[in-house]
Image 1: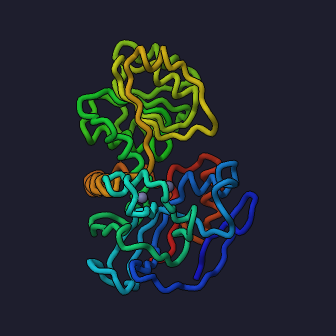
Image 2 (image 1 turned 60 degrees about the horizontal axis):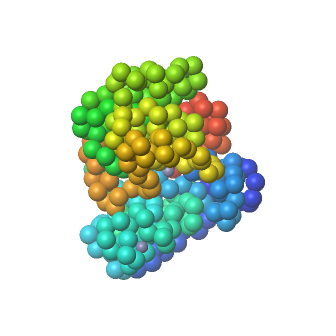
Length: 340
Ligand SMILES: [Zn+2]
Ligand SMILES: [Zn+2]
């Protein structure tokens, strides 16, 4: 069957074929129909510092997908052949303190599909049954394929209840844009987006942003001084954006950090965090499975918002085009189609 793999060190990906594998007793075999291309895939495609340390080629990429169960392992119950499912791509140990106390997204022994083991850019993938997420018939394939990044957005938005708050979002890629719509859907009084790309600022407005600011040509802190944000969702991983966001916040504000800085950052902790009484929260993965319920609800009630994010649905064989479009900044979210 067809698969997209990182064959060797260096930039690029290759088409390949692999054999179908029998699921282990606790796994199901899934026919992948659609899979999302993510920033993580782009890192591995470009073979940056992070992926050189983490990824061991050959590896089939892809961790966001939807498909149909074609075979059940011997010990699997509660699912049936033919059922449409997505899945949490973080496979956790299930026995550590964090897994045992409702914080499995922080499990130190997490194995990620498409990063540490075979991913979903393939006609089939085997997944442990506890990771499956049954998909409602009300949710389209293209939308169901991106539960994972929408989950990152939702996890960040819900870190601090947005109801009645002024939420500032720095960085409006696919996840930042999703966070705009989710913040509004969850009662944010006002959403301010800081993003250099004019096109992305326009999409943010369509998704409900009240104010959009170009940080390269506008003084962000001065612009929000009359009505300071109370929550900052940092989605860019950019040091300057973080500093600007911290300066912009009202005293006592809350900060959820999802964007990953490529290297250590320097901030004035005393002036920007301690004396302002800010609360900082790092965000990784999705809560299992509270976040999935929240995303499910969002997908069923706001499909028009998700349509703004999925700019391309391409045949899986055209994966090179997908990476070219993303690299050129000409797409927001691309979904690859592996089967009908
Ligand atoms: Zn992803
Ligand atoms: Zn664990």
